[in-house]
Image (tube, rainbow over all chains, first blue to last red; front, side, top):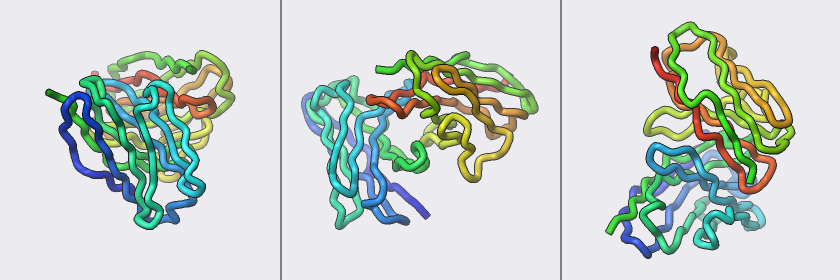
Amino acid sequence: QVQLVQSGAEVKKPGASVKVSCKASGYTFTTYPIHWVRQAPGQSLEWMGWINAGNLNTKYSQNFQGRVTITTDTSASTAYMELNSLRSEDTAVYYCARYDVAFAYWGQGTLVTVSS
Amino acid sequence: DIQMTQSPSTLSTSVGDRVTITCRASQTIYNWLAWYRQKPGKAPKLLISKASTLESGVPSRFSGSGSGTEFTLTISSLQPDDFATYYCQQYTSYPWTFGQGTKVEIK
C-alpha cells in the first residue's frame, strides 16, 4: 500500500534552516509528483510547492519568497523540503502529499517549532 | 491568488442530520475542486476530487456538486466519525489554495 513517512519533529531558532524528509513506498516513486503543505496551529492549510519526481521540475508558492527548496533522492524514494530563514510564523506541521487525483495520500506530518 | 471562502465556519449539528457546506472561489476554477476531512492531530483525508468524484472507499453519504465558482459538500446523514473539520481546495491555478475550514461539531 502507498505510504509516505516523514521525519521527526524539529525545534529551530529564528534564522536557521530546516529540512524535512518524506519517504515513499508502495509505488514507483518517479511516477507521481510530491507536494508540500503546511498548517500553522489552529489554522487552515497552505500549499508550499511541488516536485515532479520524474523530471525534477519544481514549482513554488511565491508566498515563501524563495525560502523553500524541494528536492528528491530517487534512489531512496525520498522527497525533501528545506525552508530557510525561519521565523516564528513558520511554526507549523509540514505535510508531504502525493498528487494524482488531488492529494489522495499524505504523510503523517512533521511539527517544526521555531523559537528562540 | 484564488481565494476560497467556506461557509459556515462552524456547524453545530447532530448524528443523522443532513449537512451542507459551501465553498466559493474568487474566480472560476472549473471543476478543479477537492474536499478533505481532517481530525485533530491527523493529516487531511481526501473525500471528493474534481468537484463530484467520490474517492474510493469514502462512504456514499458524502457527495459534492458545483462548478465554476460555487461548490457544495453534502453529508446525507451525519455519523459520529464525521465530527471534524472540512476543507475545500482548488487545484487549477498556482498557488493552490484551501478554504479556511468548516468545523462540524456536536450540538
